[in-house]
Image (tube, rainbow over all chains, first blue to last red; front, side, top):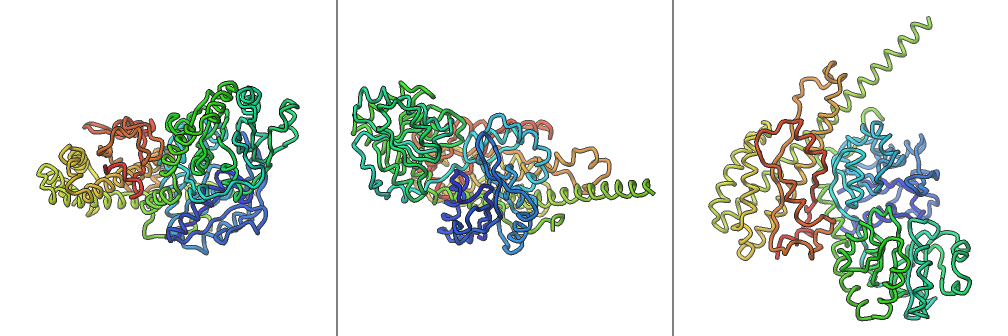
Length: 377
Length: 230
């Protein structure tokens, strides 16, 4: 099939939607489909061979974080040309409610359109307010996919429509085969954190607060922290005597991310809320690292109610310290958790997920390919 | 002069708006047609594979349900409405497919049973896409301006197709320990709750029923169907 994917956020800025689109595109190519991705991009050289540049995006606050968005005549012209030059059997737009390329593509195209919704936000004023304005574009969408139960609920509540649940995928071989980072070598008591370090929702502060209590039981405990943000500011929040126990890697490349997971004994996700889906948990499980995560809905589902990873009460640093200490002290238990994790993550392999998505494509694709909408040409 | 210009501008604006509304209605009509075609072909496929299973395993009851459904599909396939006769026949086929006798064929004809389950999942998905399209059309056609100016022409108002397409659960100890679905569904309860099977439902009731968020799963690919085979 000829498949056009539209990604709303800047390709070379790390983010869940971009990773999803990239992995989906690559899984589809591997399944023998013809794929083109249109996306805003900062640096052209970051674009893969199947990528098409939609222009530079402008950063604006959206849904509690900073998103880079794009709407304008130049990008509209590029989207139009992209649609015209490819006779896509299916146009698959991601996060089409964000004012960017996906919404543009939705407005400009006609024919079999599939949309994937990633965001979960119980009270999005933007979505509610924009409902009426979005309806003409949304009614072109023939099948909606939500990546999580939370994202599906957001859709039901704000747009009054349902969606098919197909979760994010994980490229399991990449994580499974990664070698640990050369530096720092784990001392056998390393806890890994991965995420934006100055984003309170990611909960790094909970993990930092757990460090003293953890060290009471595991004197050699260390934290390996990977993710963009102001490292100095983070260290200032740690007791001076413990600062050498927090190893900051800064922003890691996509290539290094799997290696980060494999550089510690336990992966910790102390998120304090608003996670739509625990993709990072799946990645850790794919890498074979046992997971300790806060007990939020999305994580509980991914971790099979705590069977495939340990859960602790959201924001409870003491409980986290004890959970981590128990696991660090018990390699056999870590091994069992890692094994359960591998079993869980197998169903999320991108090949499996991409086939399910193709099933939806087949359902909407007809005799007519995607074309430019009559009133937009 | 100013008055003329203002009048012309207003007239042009109104005409543009109405044209745009009409083009939305046209597009939605195409979407409903395509969804209907898709649904009919998935129903036909289900009848075909169910018939094959009934024949191979000599399941009389299933065979009868298949024949009833096949007969009820002739009309829609020729352009007729997807009416309550079709719904009733498809419902009895769905029920027959969930019977213990069918589940028991897992030993004798696992591939035929698997094909039936894949087809059943596809019917559920196709029906959902169809009803989504119908809902969007009905919402737009309910607008006063569309009704008063008859912007949708002579096209009949499409109707929802409501059948019990809850998927059968096979050889599964409750789904809790089985992650083949991998879509975070909460056990089997919700699947059963999507069942809507009964007479006397008017369009409005269906519409409100649709909005309460009954969910549907997308077990359409082979990769995901392992759930149904022991």
